[in-house]
Amino acid sequence: MPRRRTLLTLLATSAALLATTATATAATEPLSKPHIAAHFTLSAEQQPENITLGGDGSAYLTFSFARQIVRVTPSGRIRVLATLPAPAKANTPNLGKAFVGGIARAHDGTLYVTYATGTDDLTGIRAIRPGGRPHRIAALPAGGLPNGLALDRRTGRLYVTDSVHGVIYRVPARGGKATVWAEGDALKPSTFAGANGLKLHNGAVWATNLDKGTVLRIPLTARGPAGKIQVRATGMPSIDDFAFTGHGDTLLAARDDNQVDLVRPDGTHTAVLTAADGLQTPTSVAVHGNTVYVPSAAYLTHKGPNLLRAHLDR
Image (cartoon, rainbow, N blue to C red; front, side, top):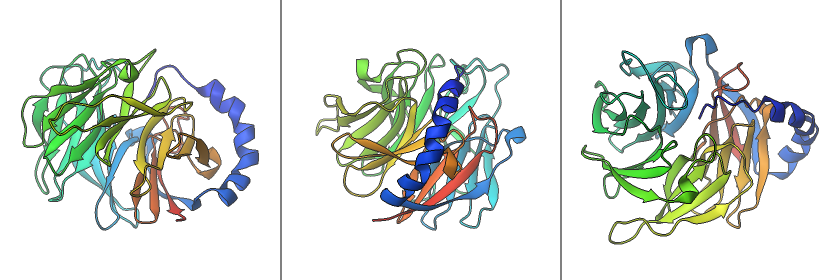
């Protein structure tokens, strides 16, 4: 997600190291053939915040500040599916302007997205059925910043991170009232934003904390309440969203400091993509078979937002 306090100093000091290690990293880590699959226009605010995939390898993206949901075909063609209504006056916490965040896709093609405006009438979760218009299915607190989103297709529930309040909400996918499902210090922000990226995997909700640089696992219990929050990885400043590489707990995490890390089940992590590969403030990750997708929003670099693809060497 975007941040007002910049990381340009960090980017500058790490640039030389990234350039000298990029070749060695590519040779030893499980990603190969990184390339830019689609270029976006920064002046049109085409800054991809989050991603979900269709069965044909199409990428569905949220353009955060353009308030748009788009489809990018495997050939790189971009089609705008919906534009969310602009608030009369946005007052979004931390950002000051309307922000489309997480996205999830149901089996029938329905898309769900989070929308933050700082206003009671618009902030919440919207659904977009194939060929239909977006409509709000659940309101969320206007004083928060709904961000990451995941759909439990088995139970028909949505899970949503709030990066300002540092909680995870649960909402019926058919629409209804949002309730706080998980909360605690591990989800809270320390300076800017806490709970951020979100995925459901192996009987648990997984989340990141951007400020604390952590990956968290929260078990789903038989009765519904959240289990105890477990810290599964640390030491990844500015971590955003992520995706699992397969059935195990290995994941790929996007970091605002122009890096994608491979995070192993024991919590150790290694950079596998860097600015040398084309990253421009990467925000999220998706995996489809042996293909990895990484959107870059250029929030901090202010140039070249794009969608990168790479091969996952299994």
